[in-house]
Amino acid sequence: MKVAVYSTKSYDQHFLHAAAIDSGHELVFFDTRLSLETVSLSQDCSAVCAFVNDDLGSTVLLRLAEQGIALVALRCAGFNNVDLNAAQKLGITVTRVPAYSPHAVAEHTVAIALALNRHIHRAFSRVRDGNFALDGLLGFDFHGRTVGVIGTGKIGYEFAKIMTGFGCDILAFDVHPNPDCVALGVKYLSLPEIFQAADIVSLHCPLTPDTHHLIDDAAIEQMKEGVMIINTSRGAVIDTNAVIRGLKRGKIGRLGLDVYEEEADFFFEDLSNRIISDDTLARLLTFPNVLITGHQAFFTEEALSCIAETTITSLNQFERNESCAFAVDG
Ligand code: NAD
Image (tube, rainbow, N blue to C red):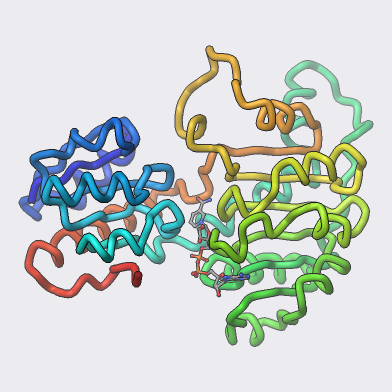
């Protein structure tokens, strides 16, 4: 099957090539994102393979359907960028990679939390500059602190498990509480109760209409003075302007982001020679107590290998007219 693979970097191509070696699929790699402007690149293909910031809204899906494409294989877990209703109406199957390495994302979340707490990002530059002063680098023990986990699926559970190892008390909110978390000693409470009690709030829920701007001015108002907020889920779970207001008045003591609601025009690209045109992102980058990584939480060898293998499995199942094990329900 000829497949148009959008938003690819050399690392994607490496892992997909390895996974597809005996499959017979012809993978055509494009570094560009899928959008209305680039959809015609997939004209003579039977399927499209896409990533987190590709546009799979109704207009693009309609164009894909007109080109005879009936499969969109996502190389990610989240599918908030796909209009599933439109896909269903157009007869397009959408598959995703529901689980690749929850450890990759959970461990990166912990890395951000530790680095922020002990100001590792600042200490690194200071020491390289011959500045060995400790002023401004004061942290706190994780041991004995309270961590609020929003969304306790695969990643939230792994994160809770690691933080339990630090000796933290774990509180959680999820629309479907996870029995494995309960067995771990996690206590499920309402969102306001978690906001009031947590020293660290970490987001691990999907982006849905219910979770859009879950962290807004009202939520931040309920939180502890100096709270640490970490978001490795999807950017728009946080109202970025609200967290900037919270940072400016000192209510938020530390903010760690691996995702940003307007990341699509920036993340995954080297823009170091350009001016950042997004004033909100530029403002965030000025705070000494904000640490941003460019959507790299998933980026481990194990995760990329699993993403590639699951994607090729979906292509194989679709080509053989088998039911797709990783299809997203509309
Ligand atoms: P999952 O489906 O296993 O878990 C998500 C959990 O969120 C579920 O338990 C679900 O019940 C819960 N949830 C749904 N709606 C909720 C709500 N309104 N409030 C609270 N909880 C709610 O997914 P996962 O594999 O743990 O991934 C979680 C999210 O992490 C994904 O949706 C994706 O957006 C993000 N993610 C980010 C990266 C990255 O590189 N930064 C990589 C993978 C996934």
